[in-house]
Image (cartoon, rainbow over the protein chains, first blue to last red):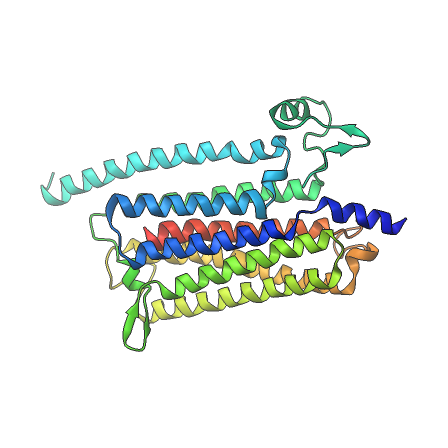
Length: 112
Length: 236
């Protein structure tokens, strides 16, 4: 009986290959994002590359290491929708920062 | 990894499944152990805390009229006499990803009831985390020695120090807590608590290998946060 149960649980886990692949990919992506600094890319190219590698790494970790890829959508959606609130907050604060730096420049340099 | 079958009843997949799960007038997260749901909710709230730190950093950096310190130079290490940009941070990143990989494998071997492999992999994860914290201590002491304070620093905008200590400090605190729990769980695994279902220290519930997955979720989250800190604070 125990043996049968064990076999069933063994069958329901994922193959080791998928974890090793994701692991390898994370190493490669981290190496690439370090290279962005190494080659000292600047401006839009730098920011785009940083964001691409960052989102790829975050996505791989969440989907496979944290098993979200295999979870039911009821859980996945509860976890991912709140991120839109964070995106909103980022947008609001970016606009606020622009206004702050504008007023600072106005008063510091022109004296108001 | 939630089960698709509960008490012989086949659950619907995809978005249709989400609709029926949510509107089922019963438990919403079907086939997911409650502790795992609780860990996810905690991680969600932790995401908001870290987001607030990083957004505040974005606002501070974008609104200062003084130049931001060049992180590539500030965090460089000298190998011989040549400065290598961000060397320590790169090594820290690789150490944390390595420990995340060993944790993922520990969860897999835990579910396969491979006690020894699971225990050794958790121990390896703990040692990886400890190495990370050690390198962070080195980084902090180096910067403090160079005169970086929460209120001033010799490299540029004054806000740099406070954001650095707050963000990396809070992350390092998470790693330290994780390391403590990893050691505790490694001991529990080696003792065989998860095989014979011994009751836990703070709970009357029987130990189960799902606890390793819950611990793994926390550890992967710590790695996940580092991905964002590495991108926004060190590379940007």
